[in-house]
Length: 526
Image 1 (cartoon, rainbow, N blue to C red):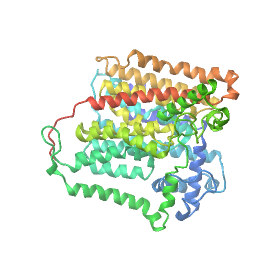
Image 2 (image 1 turned 120 degrees about the vertical axis):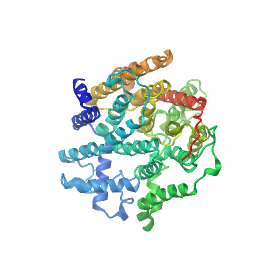
Image 3 (image 1 turned 120 degrees about the horizontal axis):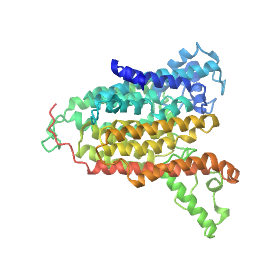
Image 4 (image 1 turned 45 degrees about the vertical axis):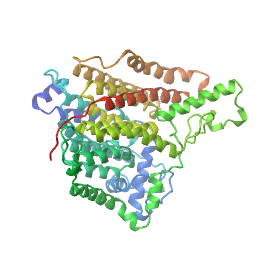
């Protein structure tokens, strides 16, 4: 706190926050890392030692390249730095290779590329006004937002313990959002197009970008009631946007089109042969659906409505598996999840078009697209919840209602990431970091909105407090029971289903606020 006071006096508080979290990331270098560490090492080897024509065919390792071409080139660039650390990590046949120099390089590559994320947070802080409470630096919306983003618990454990490059990618997304807030639409569109060719999961929020740019940029004027002035449509702007998207896509996919490998690239990017759920069920609607199927199966067996010999083994004995076979409820297909996702997204798109609320309306729509895709998508990873949590941080410092949704979503979503770190040494780290982040989030936002109604009602408070007993049960009590060997998946199931309830509630609460909020009536002339 003393350091922040000094920094505040010199106007360098943001640099102090960024430096502080960077030092924390360095302290996490020796911690556990997941198979994603080997995934990215293998991609370094593939892009460094093989010609581009083999990048999306190479299958020596099970961790084949399945990100878009820009990320492959990103790995290619990193590999030319990696060779100065340890040349052996760039050998495709060195499966599961690790060394102290490899560890240092990969960890520091994540920390270094986070520079883009830090810059994007700085730009986002320029766009957010929010409420002004008190004269203290720590009560300013920009300070609170900086902490919520730079010190985000989920991003810290996913990138700097579990191991991924989400900070760099979210930096692109947040910078794109900032540019749209600043009415620099072409830059925002360009950055988002680039982002899509780094990681295709951001397709989830593409509808929000498309509709907002069409509504707010391609139509240059509104009527006094906020509706579109149809004769203000600009073909030049549409062509400009299309050209940006085309050129970025051509740069990314062009080489593979020339090699006649586009089908191979897309088969890697969209592997629909995987199951409905990831190995650990993401806390979404399908987790509740699967959990209900298991409960009905147990009841059916007890009441002898079901034949035990006809129960799929993967359904009842293997726990959380990728190919989940439903016993009582209808099995779910990729097409069904697509339809559900589109239905869930459509109302938010409708509001963005017919109830324009400026950049904040766009941000709300983006979050709802992310959450709806998380809720109903096919083979969703639990880490995808960050796609909603991080942009929701920007809304949290503006309105008390959004702050309430943010706190429920963040606390529940972050806790749902706990199973990613299952090793004993990381247990106190994840508990301490989450407690610190959660306590700060709640206390700072309560202070910011102290003149308004409480951020939580009794039901929400009771639910969030329930995460404590759940953690005690899963981490400390269950391992001592006889069920540990027979039903090892129960802690994961309980975590997934309990968190799915909270995330579903946050999604519904945000949707209601979007649907009932009036449009911002303002004549636009650009």
